[in-house]
Image (tube, rainbow over all chains, first blue to last red; front, top):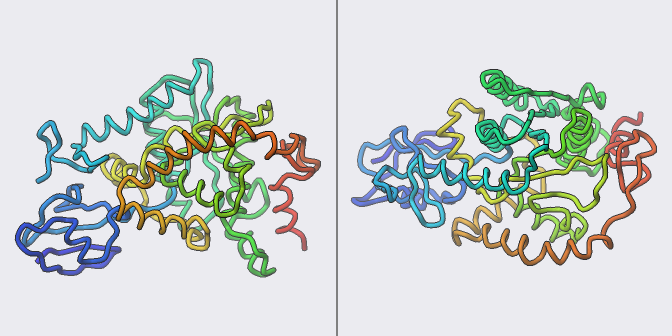
Length: 65
Length: 305
């Protein structure tokens, strides 16, 4: 299980061995270009691996600047 | 863990290449500085249009560290409660801590109402006008007028790759060739002492990259979106492009390159056919291609009792 924080809500997501951030995004129906993944407090890439017990937050690429 | 070529942990993938924080920041800052060095002349005075959001704070930070020209920041506070007040507070602190000159102008003082109040008038009268049209017109008007009065020779906008491609598509959908011919790094085709040249040094930087840069460098920067965003055409086109890019990485970059390298030169050669003669607005005296400029027209429409 990975704890996922998304748009202020927290949920648990089952991940298999060797799963990546991209796999979690696909599972949640998130667009790659719309979110920045933050794994255990660090900005990471979509290619990074996730494992049991990880905390994964998706920060939305907010418009306007 | 995904690693950068140098062996450090990667924070983003750019053009298929994982980059660590140092190499990512060198890439982003280097791309912006290249544009600055290409387009900014030695005696230029730069007015940086800032909102306190991720893009303009990133641009301001880069220009400040670059130090290649005199500059100051201009914020137009349109008066959106619970949104602009937060980004403005961040920006004022950001500028104070770095000794950056900041000038603030507000819709309320300049036009008599905040954007929130203009929107209430619009809704009461059931006028068919997007909030972005009101806001964008008034914003450009104030930026040009005050940048000119403060002696700026260029106004820098932090429009990113996503903004530029969205604008291209919006103009394509409406068939607005005049608007399309004015884009690119340097905006505008009419030279006049009344118009301050507009320059966009970040149009090759994806919005997502600016978000990563902001998260790494300004963790306390407010990340809210404008509450009027969802009523805009831009919002719908943005959704379309996000989906396209996620499924076909590199789409936005390819579109921008086609636009800048193939379409824009043709449009610029024919630009005289798209624009009217430059004159002064009969109401306010600011430059306009019409008898009454768009800002005065909107103001009259929303203030008439």
